[in-house]
Length: 505
Length: 128
Image (tube, rainbow over all chains, first blue to last red; front, side):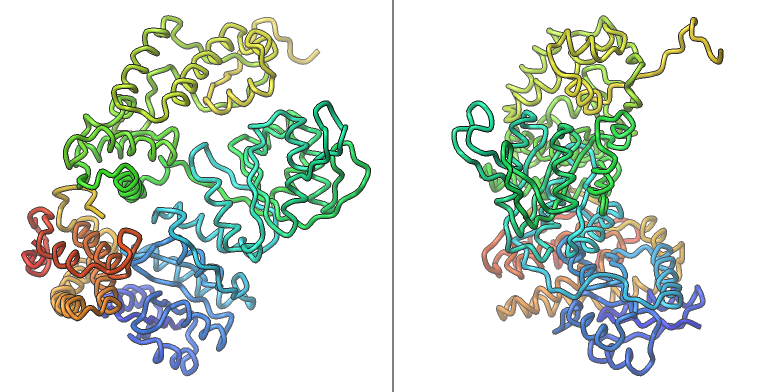
């Protein structure tokens, strides 16, 4: 019978775990102190240890190191009331088997412990990373305790200390840059530079120059040599955000850099070596782009040393109250509204039922607006932005004021789903702007442009029956921009079966 | 730091039971532990903060936070977390604020106990 050791000063937790694990056929011994726990590891050689991360007089992380000195293969599962991201990441970096936070879900914990027991039997290698102590963190990077975000913390912990490229995937506003920063701060390059570049923000030629530098005279306006980010960041970490928007020529150079750690400046002959860790992020469907030949398959394979998926906020609803509290506290401080006490239950219900298409970034803006609008100590629904109160539904789906379509599928040779051609345009925009002005929005420009673009691109694609080239011509933009907006606005392109299509001969 | 939502239920028996795999005997046993251990922890917390021993105060608040989480006692848990943060000199205060802790203990208004409230979560009036 497998033996589990529980080390926790909370006797109710020891009782709970003993009761639950014995019911699934495991033998359990328990103790309240780290010293006894370490003694039992040596004497009884348990198969799994459940360890409180905060024991009296001793950090659970220190106890883990001592356990590893005795038996490096022993799976240790941390149990704690503190689900801070830094603790989770550090625990995983030290090689903890897993990390669970209170309140415990016993059926899930039983499965986890059983898996750890099986691992102990089957595997003979240590679970994870080197026992590097992590750097101090200035504060929580992430707020959340849902199972989904905990997996993100664990993934960061598993890969941060390695030099492998990491691809971070997730919708806009989910915190991809935060993940990149966390990876950097928990890496051995944490004392070296960290540089972030948004690949969608620069035209192709400027992006190449920004990344690789250029020689004097290499193009019009290049009046002197410029050192690019890959050269500046030698020894450090570069974060390429929106890597799906990278032009093919730049993709080729980045691929070579990933393969050989070498490159030439634009217009230059000298080959330069560099040592840079590359982290990338995208909300684009890169695999589809590879099929469409707009993104290099070999580059995707190189970028994808490890992929971390960030869940959209609607898939981690357990974290919504915690995030709201976090942003509320920040807004209180930054806007000097210290009299704000909290939110009413119906306000929280509206926010729990909202779809959060803009994810965490949108939440920060909504909370800030609510705090600005508040005229008493309690935030009530009246203080929320109108698009939130109007679009909150019990199933949590976002209902837009402007017509939105189904999630995007393949955009080629298809037409967008037809929308209501009578859908209001100028009048609705005007009302929206007035509402935002009334609520003292600090994000009005971006919000309005987003809505205008969403309507405009949908309407033009309807007009051209889904033909992106024609749409690009009408709008006076590149096809790349059309594809980007189709993805960003979830414009659905359903296939249309034509009556005159011939199959076979 | 402020409570997020007013008038939350003191405990939630249904959620607590679900997390314990439906084991009512276990829930009852854990409730018994809570009723025995929480008062002592709260006395220790008060003693520690009165003595200015913020390290011990944080440890006691941390323990209370963990104890109460089992019963989905969100107001209690949030309050304990807040006290722990204050005692650790968290981001909302440069150093532990003893007076703030006392005020929070005395003036917290977290709603009325409901069914299954664990004897008003250990004499709720100690907090209210």
